[in-house]
Length: 482
Image 1 (cartoon, one colour):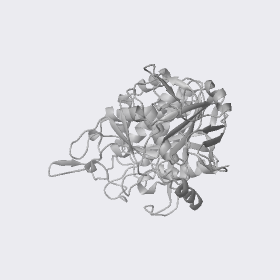
Image 2 (image 1 turned 90 degrees about the vertical axis):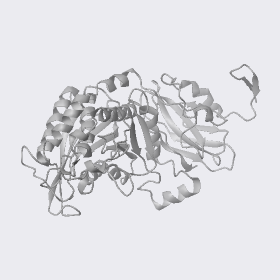
Image 3 (image 1 turned 180 degrees about the vertical axis):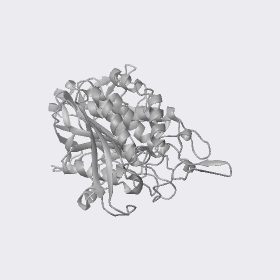
């Protein structure tokens, strides 16, 4: 037992044992000081009593702030308008016409990304990733589907990969109509514009981990392009630690005229899509329905991208996607990777999946005039803050377990040490089981085991890595182990 002083100077007496093992306490000081503090605390005054300091967001540093300022609203508008001008980008439309159809759009995106990559000194490569999809749902004849993929190779952790996509195919009212105009400005030229603008801004920068920025095809017909991209990454054994789909991020105005220009939704699943029966059994035994890798990723996005530098509030939705609907992140969830979907706060269904027409004086169709280009720019900043923070931080800790060999009211956590050259150490986070966000943080140093004087029966724990600059990884939720 010991004493310490409160902020007002009144001594109080500790009533519980120290929360760290001696070995962890001896090295806790090696963890870098966090980046410049912000006044808001995730736990705030509601943080529960117990060890640690209140959890706080991770504010952007100078490098990230400069990156976000370079995101160009006019370029984003030009990209959306150019993609809409191809008339239709339907997956089954013409692939050889140089002016109209998905082939013309594909070639233009490829040329633009190749031009951006020239500024990377060879670190960014651009590829056309094609395959022939045999007849299947919404694909009546063998059809070539092509993703346009820009890869910015990381300098120090190139095997760790983060992916963002937008889909460049479009549709009219009839999903099989490959002839009618389908400008697809909001759905999803807006998402492609986010991807392309970030490729331009990132090309001249050095990231620690690898970033993949892809314009995928075949989404409207059934997620075909993203499924192929995810399958190729899986077959190559790539360590994809996060993926985001940007789909319908073009407007802040709902069908009733309501505007929310500074909110973006992030859909994040709870129970993992790829969960096995054995994993389900463990989850049912220990809890964690709100602690999937995708939920931890969503918490990370809120920490690094919900701030003044992006000008946006990230509204996390506890669903895989909209009700009975889905986008390209599902292809990555099916492979077992954490993923989420960014989308606008409220949709206007007169301007998506509609033939271009006027009915009773009302304009229908997904036209650029219904996009909010300032809004898309802020969504791009949310993506930029997220990607850069992920790529510059250590990877999500691996092999995190709660030791269960002994019955005790202490909690012992173990994990594998990361290999990053600038790794400083680790932090344990915890929260009440009824809390949505992490509430307390315990810096524990450059160790791989720690014992905390809190019962695993009563709270949830997580572990995240910290580098010498104070960048923090997403949280890893522990599994029972020995």
